[in-house]
Amino acid sequence: MILTYNLKHGNDFSAELVKAKKIADFAIRTKSNTSKDVKHIGLKSAIANQILKKYRRRGIKKSSTVKLTIPGQSIMFDVQSKMAKIPCLGLELDCKYLPAFLKIRQVEIGKDLAHLSVEMPEPVICGTTRFIGVDCNTTGHCAVVAVPHTGKIHKLGRHALHIHKKYKSIRRKLQKQGRYQLLRQMKSRERNIIQNLNHCISKKLVQIAISEKSGIRFEKLKGIRYNKKQHHSFRYSINSWSYFQLQKFTEYKARMCGIEVAHIAPAYTSQTCSKCGSLGDRDKKRFQCVKCGHADHADVNAAFNIGKPVSHCAVDYAINSMSRLHKERDLCKGSTDTPLSQSGYQTATPEMLATVEPLTL
Image (tube, rainbow, N blue to C red; front, side, top):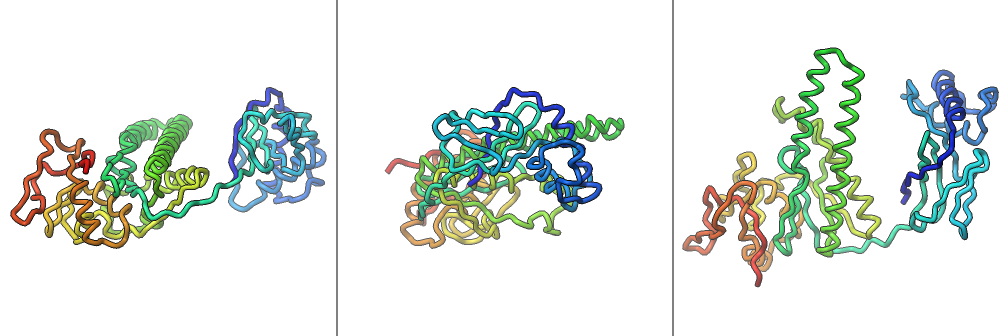
């Protein structure tokens, strides 16, 4: 596993950064791959080769912020003093506050920060039969987490939809005014806010998995944006959906803790009853089973289906029936009493869209 840490270097490399920008522009223009062609610019060959290698690739048409890239072969690391020495720049980086790592793979030097990429030892992934189910959504909460063996619910990322709508309105106004530079800044700001939100959600998911001693299970949503059945009014929501980034952030954080991450097919997860396994009726965020009468929030029902074991036996059904008497706090308030029919099943009422703590047995 390779992780990147940011360290302040406290040196002035403005002259070297200007030379690096010239080399990047030369690589884009000529597709050169040897430092002999840029020897006249005056930058060390170890750094020039890395910049040429990066910017000569197809698809790169413009260089914006070019950093000084030093490969691991040109870096000396003193194990006793925990200092990383870069002779070609005369720079020393203090690594004593970093966690233990195997070796330094690369260092990128910017104006103020040094981005240190190190290879970390990976803990052994422990196999498990218990998973928490994570239902990723474009509307409502970004992630609805269900713990099938306890009946607990966690809802994360409620503000993501508001952020997208807010910046969509701002960009529309800037587009009409022709303020394109500020428009790009707004796009970057929105992207940074959502990225920070995904980091917080993924960290919380790993914490839940550790506390529940379970793995994490997602839906495999690759290619969902190419579904032609979606209404045109839903296109903006699904195109601004950062589910892949959230899953990747969670995967690498989980690997660091030795937690297993799995994916399942998303078909019918929100339309299948999480108690009896039969197909039910879904209307927006409401789900109701026509067979057993179970009523629930559609995202909560999907999260339980994602996290629960594949086989549905009578024992699982009995345990879930006792642990899933709950109330959906976002949709209704009041008594959590649930009327029962003569057959012993819960009867569906309009107020039964629900989630509370499980009963103590």
